[in-house]
Image (cartoon, rainbow, N blue to C red):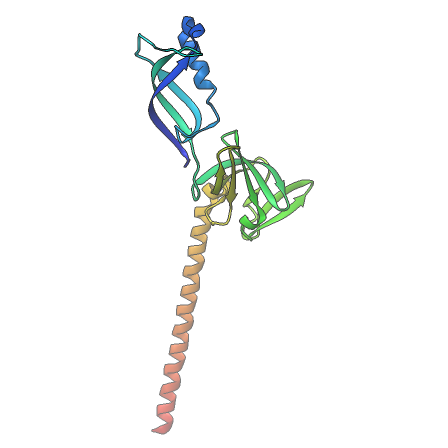
Length: 221
């Protein structure tokens, strides 16, 4: 999925002297406090990490609140969606004018009616809300559906996105992966049949014109 990247980083983690007895645990706690928050230094939301330190001597920094710094080599999994990227998420709520989605279990997405293409018709059947395609009834979006959408914007502070279902390659992921190619084949087959019918009709017209022309020449002779 777009928006995810793995970065190599060299970090300096500052710890209080009281944490010197268990440095590994202190480093783990410090890095864990950064999870699922947008970090400008990393240019993304930290989702996971692995870190190691080769330093045997820590650098002590004096001051009102003395601390010591430990150098780390870290591998970071970051999430930073940009406009026009294609993401996938799970639908958690539907309304007549909006679809609400969660991506990777933490980032919320809202898709409003003006960003939902016209083929999707909002329906309520047996108490269940859905957006159903008027072009193919098998293409449905319901609560629990995983959808593919295009990012419009991302609020780094509250980790909220606005999305779009206007492009034709967006919608129910299961339907897109299973039936989109099938529909394309059906569409191409229909086009070929239409072209064959047009060619056949043209041949009949041309044949009729030739016969008519021959009759016209005979009548004049």
